[in-house]
Image 1 (cartoon, helix red, strand yellow):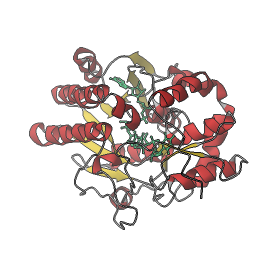
Image 2 (cartoon, protein in one colour):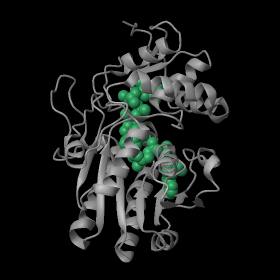
Image 3 (cartoon, helix red, strand yellow):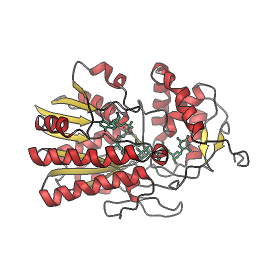
Image 4 (cartoon, helix red, strand yellow):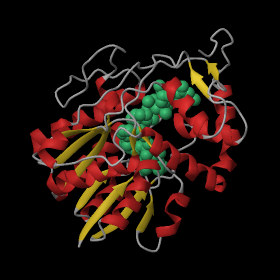
Length: 343
Ligand code: NAD
Ligand code: TDX
C-alpha cells in the first residue's frame, strides 16, 4: 500500500482530496501535514480522522518535513497561502510558505528520492484580455500579477530547477479557480452564498467583467489522481473544465437566481488592486495524453446548486467565522461603490 503525504490537507482543496482519495482510491495510506492557519480547519477532516494520520505542523520546518517525507512514498503538495486579497495586505506569509516551504519539501524529496506532485495555479500566467481568443497552455510564459501568484510562480520554478538539476521525480499541475464544499468563505463563490443565506447582498468587485475558468474541486482532484497514475515524470499539466465564458457578474446572478432572489440584488464594491481580467485554460494535453475528463464540464449551474446546498446544510461550519471575515474586508477598505448601477 502506497503511503501518501498530503500537505495542506485541512484546507479547501486538500481536504476534498483526502475525502476523494478515501472514496475512490482506498489503496493509499494517508498522512496529512497542515499548520492549521486561519484557512485550515480540522473539522474538514473530522469524519475521517480514524482513517488517516493527521500531523499539525509547518512545511517550513525542515526537520519535521524531512521525517515525514522519509516515511512517505508520494508527496502531494497543496499547502499554501492562497488568497490574493490577503497577499496585497501582507505578502510575507506567501513568500514564506509558498516559496520557502516548497524549498523544504524539494530538499527532502531530493534527499529521500520520493515522488512529488506539486499543485499550482493558472495565476502564474498572468491574465488575458476579455476578447483574447487564446487560452493558457503548458507553454505560456509566466507573468504573475499579485504577490500570491508571484510566490506560486517562484515555487513552480524551484520545482522545475530541482527536476532538471537534481533529477527529482516530480510533476506539476496548474489548475483554474476551484469551487465546492469546504471552500473558505473569504473566497468569491462561498462569500456570496453565505451572504445571501444571511440576507445580505453579494459583493461584486468593480464592474464584474472579470472571467474565471471555474472547475469543481472534485474534477481538480480527479485530475491529480490521473496524473499520479499516468502522468510523465518531469511534465506539467494544465487542469481546466472549459468554463471560461461566465463573468463574475453572471456568476452572482446565477447564484441569486438559484437561491430564489432577484437577479440584480447585489452591490458593487471597491475593485481589487491589479485585478486580473480573465483566465482561460487549455487542458488538451491532460485530456488527450492521460484521458482525463471533468464530470461537471460546462455545467457550472449543476456544480453551483450542489455547492449552495452544502453551505445551506452546513451553517455550523461557516457561521462562526462569517462576522470576522466580513469585518476584515471592511477593515481593508472595501466600500460599496454607488455610481456603478447593476445592468
Ligand atoms: P486553502 O487556503 O483553503 O488551504 C491551504 C491549506 O494549507 C490550509 O489548510 C492551511 O492551514 C495550510 N497551510 C498554509 N500554510 C502552511 C504551512 N506553512 N505549513 C503547513 N500547512 C500550511 O487553499 P486551497 O484553495 O485549498 O488551495 C490549495 C492549493 O491549491 C494551493 O497550493 C493553491 O495555490 C492551489 N490552487 C488553488 C486554487 C483555488 O481556486 N482555490 C486553484 C488552483 C490552485
Ligand atoms: O467578494 C468578492 N467579490 C468579487 O467580485 C471576492 C472575494 C472576489 N471577487 C472577484 C475577484 C475575482 O475576479 O471574484 C473572482 C474570484 O476571486 P477569488 O475567489 O478571490 O479568487 P481568485 O483571486 O481568482 O483566485 C483563486 O483562483 C486561483 C484562488 O483564490 C487562488 O488560490 C487560485 O490560485
